[in-house]
Image 1 (cartoon, rainbow, N blue to C red):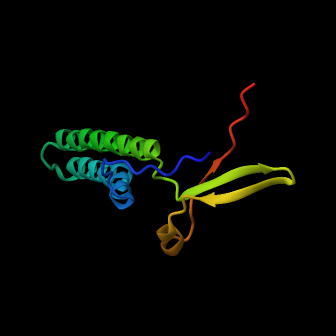
Image 2: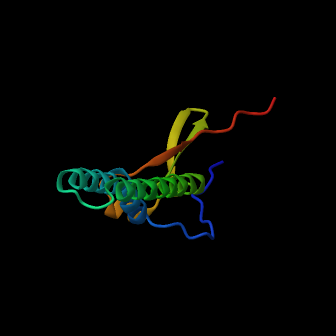
Length: 123
């Protein structure tokens, strides 16, 4: 039996929001903190350590939000575009596509599928 892709009532931010936050945490804020700190040393700009430290603290906060959003998406199953269901038959095994997000097939260059295997019989 397959588990359908979750349709939770909680509205999760889109992948685009997640991607922008992740880019901000991984590149933009650290680069800006390093840039200001370096320029403050060269040009005697005010409060170099304080400004770059504040940006770094903000970066940690954004990073925590990114990890939290990823865990919400993973728990909801929203990272998958559908399921490949493994089915055993008398003549062998087969895979069946289930719960496919048709928009993913139309709009993406690649899709992510979760393999759903049959549960072993209870002895």
